Amino acid sequence: MIRRLLLAGAVLVVGGCRPATWPGTDLAASPPASLTVYAAASLKAPLAAVRAAYESAVPGVTLTISSGSSAALRTQIEQGAPADVFLSADTANAQRLVDAGLAAGPAVPFAGNELAVVVPKDNPAGLRTPADLANPGVAIVAAGDAVPITAYATQLIENLAALPGYPGGFAAACAANIVSKEEDVQAVVAKIALGEGDAAITYATDVIARAGVTRVAIPPAANVRAAYAGVVVKAAPSSEAATAFLAWLAGSDGQAILAGFGFLPPP
Image 1 (cartoon, rainbow, N blue to C red):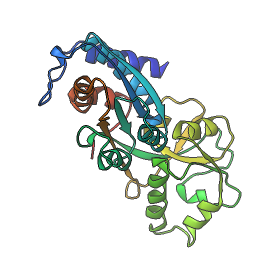
Image 2: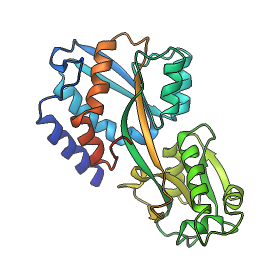
Image 3: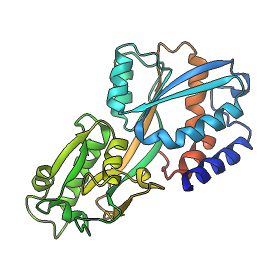
């Protein structure tokens, strides 16, 4: 219900505004186009609202959203998958397409996020602080090594290990407690919601309005700021429409929707 209200509110707010302008783009003059957007799994919920708002603001343009691990989606684009826009949960995967000559322009920052330690609602392992992630027998669900959340989580663990009161060997103990590695962050959170693990490190936005989970507070000094970036794929058949969409997402209207789902401005 909360997610439906967020979606409806975002569409009403943005749908009632004129499309935001951006240097080099004219949304009102955008030709009819069907855009395929490959997007990080953590963007799945807000992009449903983005799609509704954008299609209302720019008649004739339709969006098809395909979500998954940023690394897996980037690999598919490298192999010729027909994407128009790529939205990554980090800057590295977007920049790799730029460096490979597969992007029509530079990577565009469009969102930020923070991390969260998530546990099942009943918290069977009794975690009270992130230090408890190192307790013997705690079952941690993680993502695959190439998934952006893994790099962010590794940095968080290093930051926590440097705080006063955290035990020696904290990072190694956390690594030893990992019981599975999932294909993307949504699969990680789903396992925790189902009680198939005691804890996970995810994006803060992944636990908003998610039934069956709760958060363990992270000391602000240790938290990690995630940076999201997007590119227009060079082979996109409707590059003008794709460029206009990415610019809109990074502009005030797109930012308003993302903020409604807990995302932060780009770092």
